[in-house]
Structures are given as structure tokens and as C-alpha cells.
Image (cartoon, rainbow, N blue to C red; front, side, top):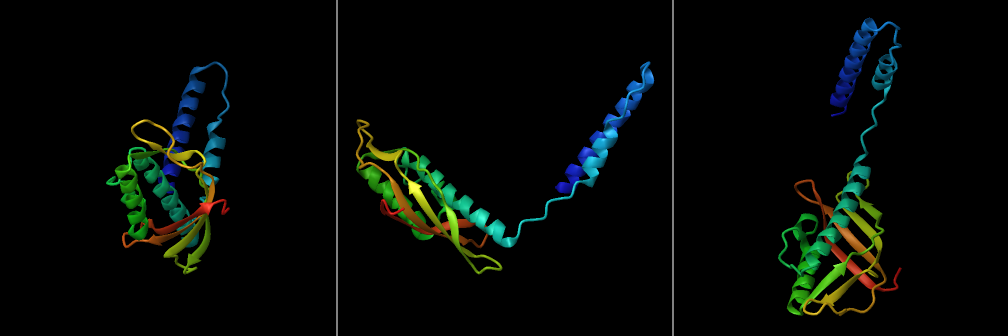
Length: 190
């Protein structure tokens, strides 16, 4: 992909140089050729090195973690415990806990409004050389993410706040990363 980008930029630079020369030939005054500096800059740029397996794994794990909560926020707005999106970033115990929680809210006539503020970080990578399991630690803030009665819109939840969240994110057989388990601690734990 990087090679294609350089080829495209080089072609654009050559086109610009040709157009400049044509315009210069038609005009009374000579025009400097700015394309020559563009061509040099485009061809001398060094490609960025590929991310290490650990960097890529941690990034993918954090993306899956955030994605799980994003999917849960969307499903929680209507307590859609059958949402197929829930399985995009969660599996196993994590997926079971999400769907059970939404099913309970649906049965009790509750919906969740707003969204949490997340601040996840990687606390452990296993194994170090080729990660398959990553532990994510977060201090999630549910202050603006609360449960309301679906029938009258009244608040049905105690005020939210900051909570410690620990999650296990595993590499799947298809090379994707999914949250397989998580634990949300009491208010004020972080």
C-alpha cells in the first residue's frame, strides 16, 4: 500500500512538472519548477516501520475493549439483548454477561442513556513475544451513563461514578481480538 501511494505521488509530481513546463513555454516569463522539490521529498521519504507484534496486539485488544462498550451502549439504549453487534467484540463470559444484563433490563422495563467515559490501558501481555491474551485495566466513569424507566423516562439508577474494570481480551482463531471476560468493581474503586 505504501508503494502504491509513492507511485501515485510520483505520477502527480511528474504531471505537475509537465504542466508547469507547458505553461512556461506558453508564457512570456519563465516559471520556476516547484515540482522538482516535491518529487525529491516524495521519493526520499522513509516508510514507517511496521508495528511490532506486541504493539499491534495491544492496539487491537484496546480497540476490541472500546468496541465492546460502544456496542453495549448502542444495545442498552433499547435494552436489545439480542443485538448481533454484541458478539463483534465480545465472546464467552463477557458476551453472556452483556446479554444477561440487557435481558434483565428489558424484562424490568429499563433502558440505559448516555455513555461511559473509558480510560483503558494494557496491564499484561501473554506471551510477550507473540501475544494471545491481554489484560486491560480501566477506570470507567458511568456518571453520564445511567438506567432510566422506558415507560416514563425517570431515573431508575443510583448516580454513577468511577469504577475499576478489569478485562481479558483474547486473540481468536480468525486472528481477531475479543473481550472474553470482564469484571466491573464497585463505585469509587479507582
